[in-house]
Amino acid sequence: LSSASSDVDAFIGCLSTAIPSNLVKTPGTNSYSELLMSSVQNLRAVLPGTTMPVVIIAVTEPAHVQATVVCGRRHSVRIRTRSGGHDYEGLSYASIHPREHFAVLDLAELRAIHINTTRSEAWVESGATIGELYYAVASANQTFGFPAGNCPTLGVGGHLSGGGFGALSRKYGLSVDNVIDAVVVDAEGRLLNRSTMGEDLFWAIRGGGGESFGVVVSWKVRLVPVPETVTVFRISRSRKQSAIDLINKWQLVAPVLPRDLYLRVLVQNKQAAFIALFLGQCGRLVDTMRRYFFELGMTQQDCQEMSWVQSTVFGYFDTASLPTEVLLNRTRTKDFFKAKSDHVCQLMPRKAWESIWDKWLDKPEAAAVNLDPYGGFMRTISPSETPFPHRNYLYQLHLLSSWFENGTETLEKRLSWMRGVYEDLTPYVSNNPRAVYVNCRDLDLGTNELEGNVTSYEKAKVWGEKYFKGNFERLAAVKSKVDPEDFFRNEQSIPPLPAA
Ligand code: FDA
View (cartoon, rainbow, N blue to C red):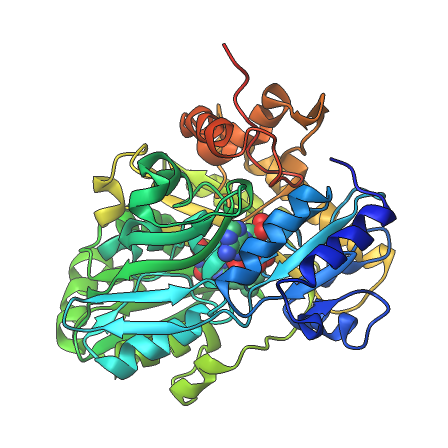
Protein backbone atom coordinates (compact mmCIF):
# COMPACT_ATOMS: atom_id res chain seq x y z
CA LEU A 1 0.00 0.00 0.00
CA SER A 2 2.11 2.90 -1.19
CA SER A 3 -0.03 5.64 -2.59
CA ALA A 4 0.56 7.92 -5.56
CA SER A 5 -1.09 11.25 -6.24
CA SER A 6 -3.77 9.58 -8.37
CA ASP A 7 -4.65 7.47 -5.34
CA VAL A 8 -4.90 10.62 -3.27
CA ASP A 9 -7.32 12.16 -5.75
CA ALA A 10 -9.42 9.01 -5.77
CA PHE A 11 -9.31 8.95 -1.96
CA ILE A 12 -10.58 12.53 -1.76
CA GLY A 13 -13.28 11.71 -4.30
CA CYS A 14 -14.34 8.75 -2.18
CA LEU A 15 -14.50 10.90 0.96
CA SER A 16 -16.77 13.40 -0.76
CA THR A 17 -19.71 10.99 -0.70
CA ALA A 18 -19.63 10.79 3.10
CA ILE A 19 -17.87 13.86 4.49
CA PRO A 20 -18.71 17.54 3.84
CA SER A 21 -15.96 19.08 1.70
CA ASN A 22 -15.32 21.90 4.21
CA LEU A 23 -13.96 19.28 6.62
CA VAL A 24 -11.41 18.00 4.11
CA LYS A 25 -8.27 20.14 3.79
CA THR A 26 -5.50 19.66 1.27
CA PRO A 27 -2.25 21.68 1.22
CA GLY A 28 -3.68 24.06 -1.41
CA THR A 29 -6.80 24.89 0.57
CA ASN A 30 -7.44 27.71 2.93
CA SER A 31 -6.70 26.92 6.54
CA TYR A 32 -4.77 23.67 5.86
CA SER A 33 -1.72 25.08 7.68
CA GLU A 34 -3.80 26.52 10.48
CA LEU A 35 -5.50 23.15 11.01
CA LEU A 36 -2.22 21.24 10.71
CA MET A 37 -0.51 23.44 13.31
CA SER A 38 -3.54 23.71 15.59
CA SER A 39 -2.43 20.97 18.01
CA VAL A 40 1.21 20.46 17.04
CA GLN A 41 3.16 20.58 20.31
CA ASN A 42 6.66 19.77 19.20
CA LEU A 43 8.02 22.21 16.62
CA ARG A 44 10.94 19.79 16.13
CA ALA A 45 8.47 17.49 14.37
CA VAL A 46 7.59 20.07 11.72
CA LEU A 47 11.12 21.11 10.77
CA PRO A 48 11.90 20.90 7.04
CA GLY A 49 12.62 17.29 6.12
CA THR A 50 9.59 15.74 7.77
CA THR A 51 6.69 14.75 5.57
CA MET A 52 3.31 16.34 6.13
CA PRO A 53 -0.15 14.92 5.34
CA VAL A 54 -1.58 15.14 1.84
CA VAL A 55 -4.96 15.73 3.39
CA ILE A 56 -6.37 16.44 6.84
CA ILE A 57 -9.92 15.41 7.66
CA ALA A 58 -11.42 17.35 10.56
CA VAL A 59 -14.08 14.81 11.45
CA THR A 60 -17.11 15.73 13.51
CA GLU A 61 -18.80 12.34 13.84
CA PRO A 62 -17.81 8.68 14.04
CA ALA A 63 -19.29 8.01 10.57
CA HIS A 64 -16.60 10.31 9.13
CA VAL A 65 -13.93 8.16 10.74
CA GLN A 66 -15.47 5.03 9.27
CA ALA A 67 -15.64 6.59 5.78
CA THR A 68 -12.01 7.71 5.99
CA VAL A 69 -10.82 4.22 6.90
CA VAL A 70 -12.87 2.59 4.14
CA CYS A 71 -11.72 5.11 1.52
CA GLY A 72 -8.11 4.94 2.75
CA ARG A 73 -8.01 1.16 2.36
CA ARG A 74 -9.76 1.28 -0.99
CA HIS A 75 -7.40 3.89 -2.47
CA SER A 76 -4.14 3.01 -0.72
CA VAL A 77 -3.85 6.08 1.48
CA ARG A 78 -2.74 5.38 5.02
CA ILE A 79 -4.13 7.26 8.00
CA ARG A 80 -2.56 8.79 11.06
CA THR A 81 -4.92 9.66 13.87
CA ARG A 82 -4.47 12.80 15.91
CA SER A 83 -6.36 13.61 19.09
CA GLY A 84 -4.37 16.16 21.12
CA GLY A 85 -1.20 16.25 18.99
CA HIS A 86 1.19 15.77 21.96
CA ASP A 87 3.06 12.81 20.51
CA TYR A 88 6.73 13.39 21.47
CA GLU A 89 7.92 12.65 17.94
CA GLY A 90 4.91 14.11 16.12
CA LEU A 91 3.89 10.77 14.64
CA SER A 92 0.20 11.70 14.68
CA TYR A 93 0.72 14.28 11.94
CA ALA A 94 4.21 13.87 10.42
CA SER A 95 6.30 11.07 8.93
CA ILE A 96 10.05 10.61 8.77
CA HIS A 97 9.67 8.91 5.37
CA PRO A 98 10.17 11.41 2.55
CA ARG A 99 7.78 9.90 0.03
CA GLU A 100 4.98 8.73 2.27
CA HIS A 101 1.49 9.86 1.30
CA PHE A 102 -0.80 9.80 4.28
CA ALA A 103 -3.92 11.48 5.59
CA VAL A 104 -4.49 12.80 9.09
CA LEU A 105 -7.74 12.14 10.87
CA ASP A 106 -8.01 15.08 13.22
CA LEU A 107 -10.37 14.29 16.08
CA ALA A 108 -10.23 17.66 17.85
CA GLU A 109 -13.90 18.35 17.12
CA LEU A 110 -14.98 14.94 18.32
CA ARG A 111 -14.89 15.84 21.96
CA ALA A 112 -18.22 15.36 23.72
CA ILE A 113 -18.13 14.40 27.40
CA HIS A 114 -21.09 12.83 29.23
CA ILE A 115 -20.81 12.39 32.98
CA ASN A 116 -23.04 9.99 34.89
CA THR A 117 -22.49 10.71 38.58
CA THR A 118 -25.07 8.12 39.67
CA ARG A 119 -22.98 5.37 38.12
CA SER A 120 -19.58 7.10 38.71
CA GLU A 121 -18.86 6.81 34.98
CA ALA A 122 -18.28 9.03 31.98
CA TRP A 123 -18.17 8.66 28.20
CA VAL A 124 -15.52 10.88 26.68
CA GLU A 125 -14.67 11.27 23.01
CA SER A 126 -11.02 11.03 22.01
CA GLY A 127 -10.69 14.63 20.80
CA ALA A 128 -11.47 16.04 24.25
CA THR A 129 -8.50 17.20 26.26
CA ILE A 130 -7.65 15.89 29.70
CA GLY A 131 -8.24 19.42 31.03
CA GLU A 132 -11.77 19.43 29.58
CA LEU A 133 -12.39 16.04 31.17
CA TYR A 134 -11.14 17.19 34.60
CA TYR A 135 -13.29 20.30 34.38
CA ALA A 136 -16.43 18.39 33.32
CA VAL A 137 -16.00 15.77 36.05
CA ALA A 138 -15.56 18.36 38.79
CA SER A 139 -18.42 20.49 37.47
CA ALA A 140 -20.72 17.48 37.80
CA ASN A 141 -19.50 16.63 41.29
CA GLN A 142 -16.50 17.96 43.23
CA THR A 143 -15.97 14.60 44.91
CA PHE A 144 -15.12 12.81 41.67
CA GLY A 145 -11.81 12.83 39.85
CA PHE A 146 -10.06 10.89 37.12
CA PRO A 147 -6.45 9.63 37.08
CA ALA A 148 -4.53 11.02 34.10
CA GLY A 149 -1.56 13.22 33.20
CA ASN A 150 -0.71 16.72 34.35
CA CYS A 151 -0.76 18.71 31.11
CA PRO A 152 -4.35 19.87 30.46
CA THR A 153 -4.01 19.96 26.65
CA LEU A 154 -3.19 16.25 26.34
CA GLY A 155 -5.66 14.55 24.01
CA VAL A 156 -7.75 11.83 25.59
CA GLY A 157 -7.25 9.64 22.48
CA GLY A 158 -3.47 9.36 22.49
CA HIS A 159 -3.05 9.70 26.25
CA LEU A 160 -5.39 6.86 27.12
CA SER A 161 -4.23 4.57 24.36
CA GLY A 162 -0.68 4.77 25.80
CA GLY A 163 -1.50 4.46 29.52
CA GLY A 164 -2.03 7.82 31.26
CA PHE A 165 0.10 8.42 34.37
CA GLY A 166 -0.48 11.24 36.83
CA ALA A 167 -0.90 12.47 40.37
CA LEU A 168 -3.72 10.02 41.18
CA SER A 169 -1.90 6.95 39.84
CA ARG A 170 -0.46 5.78 43.17
CA LYS A 171 -4.01 5.75 44.51
CA TYR A 172 -6.02 4.60 41.46
CA GLY A 173 -3.58 3.45 38.77
CA LEU A 174 -3.26 4.70 35.22
CA SER A 175 -6.10 6.11 33.14
CA VAL A 176 -6.32 2.76 31.36
CA ASP A 177 -6.86 0.93 34.65
CA ASN A 178 -10.09 2.91 34.80
CA VAL A 179 -11.36 2.37 31.26
CA ILE A 180 -14.42 0.11 31.19
CA ASP A 181 -15.56 0.32 27.57
CA ALA A 182 -14.55 1.97 24.31
CA VAL A 183 -15.80 2.56 20.78
CA VAL A 184 -13.33 1.79 18.01
CA VAL A 185 -13.34 1.99 14.23
CA ASP A 186 -11.37 -1.03 13.05
CA ALA A 187 -9.44 -1.64 9.84
CA GLU A 188 -12.66 -2.79 8.13
CA GLY A 189 -14.35 0.50 9.01
CA ARG A 190 -16.66 -1.15 11.55
CA LEU A 191 -17.78 0.68 14.69
CA LEU A 192 -17.19 -1.70 17.60
CA ASN A 193 -17.69 -1.53 21.35
CA ARG A 194 -16.16 -3.71 24.04
CA SER A 195 -18.52 -6.60 23.51
CA THR A 196 -18.25 -6.56 19.72
CA MET A 197 -14.49 -5.91 19.52
CA GLY A 198 -13.67 -8.69 21.99
CA GLU A 199 -11.37 -8.69 25.00
CA ASP A 200 -8.09 -9.00 23.06
CA LEU A 201 -8.54 -5.76 21.16
CA PHE A 202 -9.99 -4.09 24.26
CA TRP A 203 -6.83 -5.13 26.13
CA ALA A 204 -4.54 -3.84 23.36
CA ILE A 205 -6.01 -0.34 23.09
CA ARG A 206 -5.55 0.23 26.83
CA GLY A 207 -1.86 1.02 26.75
CA GLY A 208 -0.59 -0.58 23.54
CA GLY A 209 -0.38 2.75 21.72
CA GLY A 210 -3.43 3.75 19.71
CA GLU A 211 -2.01 3.98 16.25
CA SER A 212 -1.70 0.25 15.54
CA PHE A 213 -5.17 -1.18 15.96
CA GLY A 214 -7.76 1.27 14.66
CA VAL A 215 -9.20 4.59 15.71
CA VAL A 216 -10.61 4.87 19.21
CA VAL A 217 -13.56 7.21 18.96
CA SER A 218 -14.62 7.27 22.60
CA TRP A 219 -13.93 5.80 26.01
CA LYS A 220 -16.11 4.88 28.94
CA VAL A 221 -14.21 5.58 32.13
CA ARG A 222 -14.73 4.97 35.82
CA LEU A 223 -14.66 8.10 37.95
CA VAL A 224 -12.79 7.86 41.23
CA PRO A 225 -13.65 9.41 44.61
CA VAL A 226 -11.61 12.40 45.80
CA PRO A 227 -12.13 14.43 48.99
CA GLU A 228 -13.68 17.90 48.78
CA THR A 229 -10.41 19.33 50.07
CA VAL A 230 -6.97 18.18 48.96
CA THR A 231 -3.61 19.71 49.84
CA VAL A 232 -0.65 20.57 47.64
CA PHE A 233 2.84 21.90 48.28
CA ARG A 234 5.96 22.73 46.36
CA ILE A 235 9.27 23.01 48.21
CA SER A 236 12.44 23.89 46.30
CA ARG A 237 15.96 23.17 47.48
CA SER A 238 19.26 24.08 45.88
CA ARG A 239 22.37 21.97 45.99
CA LYS A 240 23.57 24.03 48.95
CA GLN A 241 20.31 23.25 50.70
CA SER A 242 21.01 19.50 50.53
CA ALA A 243 19.09 18.82 47.31
CA ILE A 244 21.07 15.64 46.67
CA ASP A 245 20.58 14.22 50.15
CA LEU A 246 16.89 14.96 49.82
CA ILE A 247 16.61 13.26 46.43
CA ASN A 248 18.47 10.34 47.89
CA LYS A 249 15.97 10.05 50.73
CA TRP A 250 13.04 10.71 48.38
CA GLN A 251 13.86 7.59 46.39
CA LEU A 252 13.46 5.53 49.52
CA VAL A 253 10.18 6.99 50.69
CA ALA A 254 8.20 8.23 47.67
CA PRO A 255 7.23 4.76 46.36
CA VAL A 256 6.16 3.54 49.82
CA LEU A 257 4.29 6.61 51.06
CA PRO A 258 0.58 6.10 51.82
CA ARG A 259 -1.38 5.98 48.56
CA ASP A 260 -3.07 9.30 49.35
CA LEU A 261 0.24 11.07 48.91
CA TYR A 262 1.95 11.61 45.57
CA LEU A 263 5.31 13.34 45.83
CA ARG A 264 7.36 13.92 42.72
CA VAL A 265 10.66 15.73 42.18
CA LEU A 266 11.41 18.15 39.38
CA VAL A 267 15.07 19.07 38.98
CA GLN A 268 15.31 22.20 36.88
CA ASN A 269 17.33 25.39 36.90
CA LYS A 270 19.70 23.97 39.52
CA GLN A 271 16.88 23.42 41.99
CA ALA A 272 15.09 20.28 43.10
CA ALA A 273 11.39 21.00 43.60
CA PHE A 274 9.42 18.53 45.71
CA ILE A 275 5.83 18.75 44.51
CA ALA A 276 2.99 17.00 46.33
CA LEU A 277 -0.68 16.20 46.01
CA PHE A 278 -2.29 14.84 49.17
CA LEU A 279 -5.86 13.50 49.16
CA GLY A 280 -6.69 15.01 52.52
CA GLN A 281 -6.18 18.08 54.65
CA CYS A 282 -3.05 19.86 55.76
CA GLY A 283 -2.87 18.52 59.34
CA ARG A 284 -2.70 14.89 58.27
CA LEU A 285 -0.22 15.72 55.50
CA VAL A 286 2.16 17.43 57.94
CA ASP A 287 2.00 14.36 60.20
CA THR A 288 2.67 12.02 57.28
CA MET A 289 5.61 14.06 56.03
CA ARG A 290 7.08 14.23 59.51
CA ARG A 291 6.83 10.47 59.85
CA TYR A 292 8.28 9.57 56.45
CA PHE A 293 10.39 12.49 55.30
CA PHE A 294 11.10 14.96 58.11
CA GLU A 295 14.38 15.92 56.36
CA LEU A 296 12.43 18.01 53.85
CA GLY A 297 11.29 20.26 56.71
CA MET A 298 7.74 20.56 55.41
CA THR A 299 5.41 22.50 57.72
CA GLN A 300 1.86 23.81 57.81
CA GLN A 301 3.07 27.00 56.07
CA ASP A 302 3.83 24.98 52.95
CA CYS A 303 0.26 23.67 52.64
CA GLN A 304 -2.25 24.98 50.16
CA GLU A 305 -5.70 23.48 50.54
CA MET A 306 -8.05 23.44 47.56
CA SER A 307 -10.45 21.32 45.50
CA TRP A 308 -9.05 18.41 43.48
CA VAL A 309 -9.78 20.17 40.19
CA GLN A 310 -7.90 23.26 41.38
CA SER A 311 -4.99 20.98 42.26
CA THR A 312 -4.81 19.91 38.60
CA VAL A 313 -4.32 23.60 37.73
CA PHE A 314 -1.61 23.86 40.40
CA GLY A 315 0.05 20.66 39.15
CA TYR A 316 0.63 22.12 35.71
CA PHE A 317 0.76 25.91 36.11
CA ASP A 318 2.46 25.89 39.48
CA THR A 319 -0.04 28.37 40.89
CA ALA A 320 -3.42 27.99 42.47
CA SER A 321 -4.51 31.50 41.57
CA LEU A 322 -5.66 30.75 38.03
CA PRO A 323 -9.36 29.93 37.60
CA THR A 324 -10.19 26.33 36.72
CA GLU A 325 -11.51 27.56 33.35
CA VAL A 326 -7.85 27.62 32.28
CA LEU A 327 -8.28 23.84 31.89
CA LEU A 328 -10.56 24.54 28.93
CA ASN A 329 -7.94 26.46 27.01
CA ARG A 330 -6.89 24.16 24.17
CA THR A 331 -3.75 26.03 23.21
CA ARG A 332 -0.40 25.59 24.89
CA THR A 333 2.84 27.38 24.16
CA LYS A 334 4.63 25.50 21.39
CA ASP A 335 8.30 24.75 21.66
CA PHE A 336 10.94 22.40 20.32
CA PHE A 337 11.50 19.42 22.57
CA LYS A 338 13.09 16.02 23.00
CA ALA A 339 12.32 13.69 25.87
CA LYS A 340 13.37 10.31 27.23
CA SER A 341 11.91 8.02 29.84
CA ASP A 342 13.67 5.52 32.10
CA HIS A 343 12.67 3.36 35.03
CA VAL A 344 14.54 2.85 38.27
CA CYS A 345 14.20 -0.45 40.11
CA GLN A 346 17.00 -0.16 42.68
CA LEU A 347 17.96 2.97 44.58
CA MET A 348 20.44 5.07 42.66
CA PRO A 349 23.56 5.55 44.82
CA ARG A 350 23.97 9.03 46.26
CA LYS A 351 27.30 9.26 44.45
CA ALA A 352 25.58 8.68 41.11
CA TRP A 353 23.27 11.62 41.75
CA GLU A 354 26.28 13.72 42.61
CA SER A 355 28.17 12.85 39.46
CA ILE A 356 25.11 13.26 37.19
CA TRP A 357 24.41 16.65 38.74
CA ASP A 358 28.07 17.77 38.49
CA LYS A 359 28.50 16.64 34.93
CA TRP A 360 25.11 17.47 33.43
CA LEU A 361 22.58 19.38 35.48
CA ASP A 362 24.46 22.65 35.84
CA LYS A 363 24.90 23.06 32.07
CA PRO A 364 22.87 25.82 30.43
CA GLU A 365 21.30 23.30 28.01
CA ALA A 366 20.30 20.91 30.83
CA ALA A 367 16.88 19.31 30.51
CA ALA A 368 14.26 19.12 33.24
CA VAL A 369 14.53 15.85 35.16
CA ASN A 370 11.26 14.61 36.55
CA LEU A 371 11.12 11.76 39.06
CA ASP A 372 7.65 10.22 39.21
CA PRO A 373 7.02 7.72 41.99
CA TYR A 374 5.20 4.45 41.35
CA GLY A 375 4.27 2.05 44.15
CA GLY A 376 0.91 2.11 45.93
CA PHE A 377 -1.93 0.84 43.74
CA MET A 378 0.36 0.66 40.68
CA ARG A 379 2.21 -2.23 42.31
CA THR A 380 -0.92 -4.27 42.91
CA ILE A 381 -1.62 -4.61 39.18
CA SER A 382 -0.09 -7.46 37.23
CA PRO A 383 2.32 -6.34 34.45
CA SER A 384 0.18 -8.24 31.92
CA GLU A 385 -3.17 -6.82 33.05
CA THR A 386 -2.79 -4.08 30.43
CA PRO A 387 -0.03 -3.58 27.82
CA PHE A 388 1.73 -1.10 30.19
CA PRO A 389 4.14 -3.50 31.95
CA HIS A 390 6.10 -1.15 34.21
CA ARG A 391 4.24 -1.85 37.42
CA ASN A 392 7.00 -2.84 39.82
CA TYR A 393 9.54 -0.06 39.47
CA LEU A 394 10.31 2.48 42.17
CA TYR A 395 9.94 5.46 39.89
CA GLN A 396 10.07 6.79 36.38
CA LEU A 397 12.91 9.11 35.49
CA HIS A 398 11.91 11.45 32.70
CA LEU A 399 14.15 13.91 30.86
CA LEU A 400 12.52 16.77 28.98
CA SER A 401 14.60 19.27 27.08
CA SER A 402 12.62 22.14 25.57
CA TRP A 403 13.76 25.26 23.81
CA PHE A 404 12.36 28.10 21.73
CA GLU A 405 15.10 29.16 19.32
CA ASN A 406 15.23 27.33 16.00
CA GLY A 407 18.62 26.32 14.59
CA THR A 408 20.81 23.31 14.00
CA GLU A 409 23.37 24.26 16.62
CA THR A 410 20.83 24.46 19.43
CA LEU A 411 19.19 21.26 18.27
CA GLU A 412 22.49 19.37 18.20
CA LYS A 413 23.51 20.69 21.60
CA ARG A 414 20.20 19.70 23.16
CA LEU A 415 20.16 16.24 21.60
CA SER A 416 23.75 15.60 22.55
CA TRP A 417 23.01 16.57 26.17
CA MET A 418 20.07 14.15 26.21
CA ARG A 419 21.96 11.27 24.69
CA GLY A 420 24.97 11.86 26.92
CA VAL A 421 23.06 11.81 30.17
CA TYR A 422 21.00 8.83 28.97
CA GLU A 423 24.23 6.94 28.37
CA ASP A 424 25.59 7.85 31.81
CA LEU A 425 22.37 6.72 33.49
CA THR A 426 22.73 3.21 32.03
CA PRO A 427 24.21 1.50 35.12
CA TYR A 428 21.47 2.84 37.39
CA VAL A 429 18.26 2.20 35.49
CA SER A 430 16.37 -0.86 34.31
CA ASN A 431 18.06 -3.07 31.76
CA ASN A 432 17.31 -6.07 29.62
CA PRO A 433 15.19 -4.43 28.44
CA ARG A 434 15.75 -0.80 29.37
CA ALA A 435 12.14 0.03 30.17
CA VAL A 436 10.46 3.01 28.52
CA TYR A 437 6.93 4.39 28.83
CA VAL A 438 5.32 4.33 25.38
CA ASN A 439 3.65 7.70 25.89
CA CYS A 440 7.17 9.14 26.01
CA ARG A 441 7.82 8.07 22.47
CA ASP A 442 11.49 8.09 21.50
CA LEU A 443 12.59 7.29 17.97
CA ASP A 444 16.20 6.86 19.20
CA LEU A 445 15.01 3.41 20.35
CA GLY A 446 14.52 2.28 16.77
CA THR A 447 12.05 2.57 13.92
CA ASN A 448 10.09 0.07 11.89
CA GLU A 449 11.26 -1.59 8.71
CA LEU A 450 9.14 -3.46 6.22
CA GLU A 451 9.40 -7.12 5.35
CA GLY A 452 7.37 -7.56 2.20
CA ASN A 453 4.49 -5.20 2.75
CA VAL A 454 4.15 -5.53 6.51
CA THR A 455 6.22 -4.25 9.39
CA SER A 456 9.00 -6.60 10.46
CA TYR A 457 8.27 -8.20 13.83
CA GLU A 458 11.91 -9.01 14.55
CA LYS A 459 13.08 -5.44 13.86
CA ALA A 460 10.22 -3.93 15.84
CA LYS A 461 11.10 -6.07 18.86
CA VAL A 462 14.13 -3.82 19.44
CA TRP A 463 11.99 -0.86 20.47
CA GLY A 464 8.80 -2.82 21.21
CA GLU A 465 10.14 -4.84 24.14
CA LYS A 466 11.40 -1.66 25.77
CA TYR A 467 7.90 -0.23 25.78
CA PHE A 468 5.95 -3.42 26.41
CA LYS A 469 8.32 -6.16 27.64
CA GLY A 470 6.54 -9.55 27.51
CA ASN A 471 3.31 -7.91 26.34
CA PHE A 472 4.83 -7.04 22.98
CA GLU A 473 4.22 -10.50 21.53
CA ARG A 474 0.58 -10.47 22.63
CA LEU A 475 0.13 -7.02 21.08
CA ALA A 476 1.54 -8.37 17.80
CA ALA A 477 -0.83 -11.33 18.00
CA VAL A 478 -3.78 -8.94 18.41
CA LYS A 479 -2.50 -6.91 15.47
CA SER A 480 -2.43 -10.05 13.28
CA LYS A 481 -6.04 -10.65 14.14
CA VAL A 482 -7.46 -7.15 13.71
CA ASP A 483 -5.19 -5.60 11.06
CA PRO A 484 -3.23 -8.39 9.32
CA GLU A 485 -2.46 -6.17 6.31
CA ASP A 486 -0.88 -3.58 8.59
CA PHE A 487 -2.99 -0.66 7.37
CA PHE A 488 -2.57 1.28 10.62
CA ARG A 489 1.12 1.79 10.84
CA ASN A 490 3.78 4.36 11.58
CA GLU A 491 7.46 4.43 12.56
CA GLN A 492 6.73 2.63 15.82
CA SER A 493 3.44 0.81 15.32
CA ILE A 494 2.95 -2.79 16.45
CA PRO A 495 3.69 -5.28 13.63
CA PRO A 496 1.58 -8.35 12.95
CA LEU A 497 3.00 -11.51 14.57
CA PRO A 498 4.41 -13.74 11.85
CA ALA A 499 2.71 -17.13 11.54
CA ALA A 500 4.58 -19.79 13.54
P1 FDA B 1 -1.47 12.61 19.57
O1 FDA B 1 -2.74 13.07 18.99
O2 FDA B 1 -0.22 13.17 19.03
O3 FDA B 1 -1.43 11.03 19.52
C1 FDA B 1 -0.39 10.26 20.08
C2 FDA B 1 -0.38 8.86 19.45
O4 FDA B 1 -1.63 8.21 19.67
C3 FDA B 1 -0.18 8.89 17.94
O5 FDA B 1 0.49 7.73 17.53
C4 FDA B 1 -1.61 8.85 17.43
O6 FDA B 1 -1.71 8.38 16.10
C5 FDA B 1 -2.29 7.95 18.43
N1 FDA B 1 -3.69 8.32 18.61
C6 FDA B 1 -4.16 9.54 18.97
N2 FDA B 1 -5.48 9.50 19.09
C7 FDA B 1 -5.87 8.25 18.79
C8 FDA B 1 -7.14 7.62 18.71
N3 FDA B 1 -8.25 8.28 18.99
N4 FDA B 1 -7.20 6.33 18.34
C9 FDA B 1 -6.07 5.66 18.03
N5 FDA B 1 -4.83 6.21 18.10
C10 FDA B 1 -4.74 7.50 18.47
N6 FDA B 1 1.89 11.40 29.67
C11 FDA B 1 1.51 10.94 30.90
O7 FDA B 1 1.20 9.76 31.06
N7 FDA B 1 1.46 11.80 31.95
C12 FDA B 1 1.74 13.13 31.83
O8 FDA B 1 1.67 13.87 32.80
C13 FDA B 1 2.13 13.61 30.55
N8 FDA B 1 2.45 14.93 30.36
C14 FDA B 1 2.79 15.39 29.11
C15 FDA B 1 3.07 16.75 28.92
C16 FDA B 1 3.40 17.23 27.66
C17 FDA B 1 3.69 18.70 27.47
C18 FDA B 1 3.47 16.33 26.57
C19 FDA B 1 3.83 16.83 25.19
C20 FDA B 1 3.18 14.99 26.74
C21 FDA B 1 2.85 14.50 28.01
N9 FDA B 1 2.56 13.15 28.21
C22 FDA B 1 2.19 12.70 29.47
C23 FDA B 1 2.65 12.19 27.10
C24 FDA B 1 1.28 11.96 26.45
O9 FDA B 1 0.53 11.08 27.26
C25 FDA B 1 1.44 11.36 25.04
O10 FDA B 1 2.18 12.21 24.24
C26 FDA B 1 0.07 11.06 24.41
O11 FDA B 1 0.22 10.15 23.37
C27 FDA B 1 -0.58 12.33 23.90
O12 FDA B 1 -1.86 12.07 23.38
P2 FDA B 1 -2.46 13.08 22.29
O13 FDA B 1 -3.80 12.60 21.91
O14 FDA B 1 -2.33 14.47 22.78
O15 FDA B 1 -1.39 12.91 21.13
